[in-house]
Length: 575
Image (cartoon, rainbow, N blue to C red; front, side, top):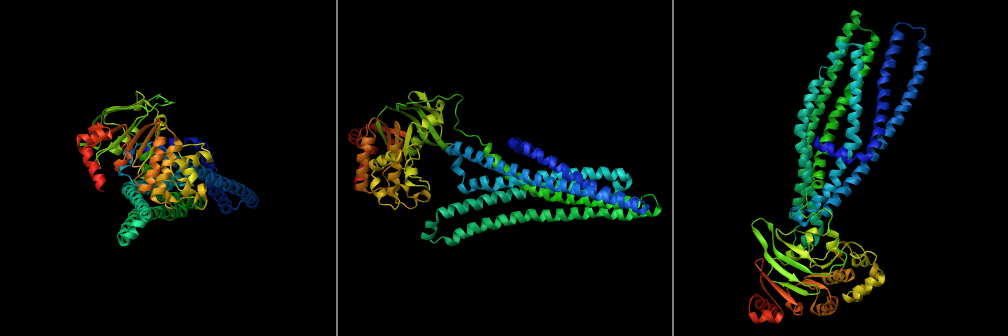
């Protein structure tokens, strides 16, 4: 009920449309309930030989024509307005989920697959559309019919009404049992559908690796398991639905049997008019189809609830990186960074960084070096506030970054990371991605600094060339240079270079390094590089080992100490 309450409250901007739809439902239902009364009256007049029968029949026929016209208009209004509200609500919900995903910290994504999240945004929200456009209106229609028919039946003949509706409590009990049995199965089906989407997304993205390593059969097996598993989960639920539906149909027919048998006896005894038994049978024909329909609606409801649970699980997810109330807006950062006794871990008990204290002055070039897995990338992730420190604090211009607006903090930083992500868009849009309003001349100037202009001009549409998903049409070195151009164009006081030249050859690296020497002027720069040749000019080199700062100094100072840095330097020279 709480979940349904969340859905109803989330859809409040569409209550007007749903309210009008409910009025249309009421009008449609009223016309349905009136028809058997017309037949009852005509039957009574015919049986009693009323001379006004012909005149009354014409009048009632015209009345029914008007009612059926109203019913058609109401049916159209109900169908369109509920779908209008439902699909707009689904669009709102998808945007809400996506916006939430944009604002969750990187910690949330550690154990999530892209396909799983996409399934929640697309498939699970689709099921909520069924709830609003079909399940809820159907419940309202059918409940009104059930209440209306029951009232009329008891008005006509209480005893016969009671006997004909004796199966209703059993139907209610069956519905409760059905809901308890089916909801877990639909939940399972939704989870497996997410797994199927995740497998497909992974496999399509990694198709080159699948083909290169001849893993077709293995990956086909994984997708097959998910596809068959989803089908089996749905069929398990539908097996219960079939049993429930057939039971409802059988119990519904018992009411008709009772009316025919007991009602016929009453007619023969002269205690029940023929017109009443005709009306009874017509009203029962209206009564039990809604009962059967509610069985189907119950199934839709369980599917929608299973999907809604997964959607609202994300919407209600709490993020560990939060903005304070009234955060500080930093307009012109100087680029002064300070780590004060910072500690961090991804998994409890497995510390990645410990007691990190370092002062990076404005305009200073600082390099982070050390073996793989010592926390270098984590260091820059904390600067970007993708995560918050477990211990200690980080300051930008002497302001705790937890007190800064996230947009303000990240607007002070340009990042060039090793795993370059490029969008399926033009080269121009990819370079200008972090610089809204950049002109073509600005983009070209940045590309020239990154030594990308020459290869861009050799492409079919130059800066208007679509580069494909993740830049699939470009080489690793070309993608890296576009990433550097993007950071150059962004022109922020803090520049982070995480293996910025890892995917380029030695000649291109030399050209880019010349350009970066110019770009790093008067800019706080943090460099991560395994090629130590790229960090010799750093003002300060921080040597990380086992999550702690083992040493700090210039290139020459660290070589003289003959410590870990000297070992790494010798390995680089021999590589």
